[in-house]
Image 1 (spheres, rainbow, N blue to C red):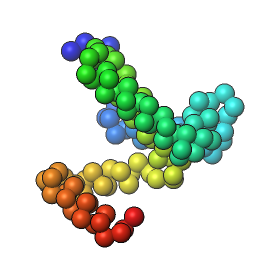
Image 2 (spheres, helix red, strand yellow):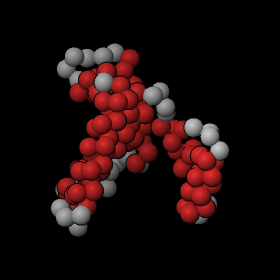
Image 3 (cartoon, one colour):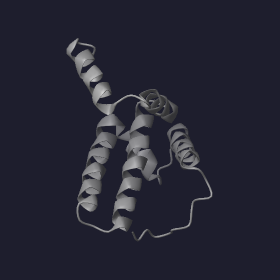
Image 4 (cartoon, rainbow, N blue to C red):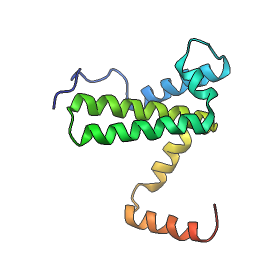
Length: 124
């Protein structure tokens, strides 16, 4: 594996995501014409969602045949764009964390089956 900077981050992963969420929230509250984040937020869920889709595809392509550095770079792009999409919907990262916490200790297959069963009940 050849990742650009093998030194551990001085912050926990969660701290980095929280700090990034804060920057995104500040761009939403105080838009800047020179900010890419502001531009994405202004495009709403449709525009930000299109970027999430694009970045997910690029991550998969990188994972299937590019260097580890490219995989890391594309994963970072995907996470950033997902956070912007959450901000477009006013969904805090803490809600995603709570959902992931809820899923701990539950078989992924069982959890997916429960979601599929509830989706058939017209909850959407």
